[in-house]
Image 1 (cartoon, rainbow, N blue to C red):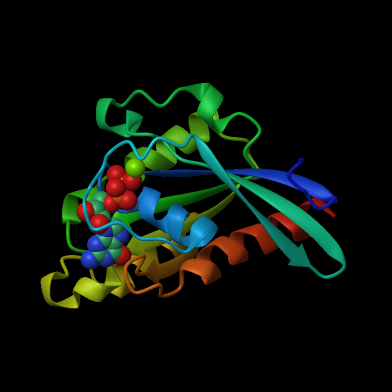
Image 2 (cartoon, helix red, strand yellow):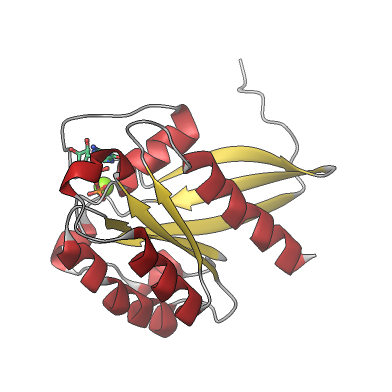
Amino acid sequence: AYAYDEECDYLFKAVLIGDSAVGKSNLLSRFSKNEFRLDSKPTIGVEFAYRNVRVGDKLIKAQIWDTAGQERFRAITSSYYRGALGALLVYDITRRATFDNVKKWLQELKEFGCSEMVVVLVGNKSDLGHSREVDEEEGKNVAVSDGLCFMETSALDNVNVEEAFLGMINKIHQMTT
Ligand code: GDP
Ligand code: MG
């Protein structure tokens, strides 16, 4: 038996970046499988996941790459970024250090990413408002000054996860057609 795969019109590659334990893998598993894990497994194991998305009359296959834990060792290589048209740059709203490092990740995107990349800045774990260390306004301000899209998400509660990924995919589609 063969797995049936719908014929798609476009294949887009996008990457997840950001510090360790900000929720990248859970955002991806939420988006691709509607799953969430409470235990932190730095390497869930997949290199990437797919989801087919319909935009207008076109079917887009979004291939989203996850780091499998390399970000811990600053070992993300240029091949990770190669061909990527979009990036979700994730920080954790309860850990300011992960927000401070957004600058470092933007630097890396400039160095390795394609110049037209669609970047969405994502403040994850919005369900943990009681231990918030980064105001929503601060995230917005960075996004505005760097020309990024911005969204706060919760992979746990499934808030804005679709919006973040689909927003990126729609923008890539607009850009390439
Ligand atoms: P990664 O290292 O960036 O891939 O982060 P993970 O996806 O492995 O998540 C790290 C930890 O944060 C895990 O314990 C997750 O259960 C937890 N986590 C991820 N997203 C959320 C979220 O939206 N809310 C809460 N409360 N915890 C989250
Ligand atoms: Mg991970």
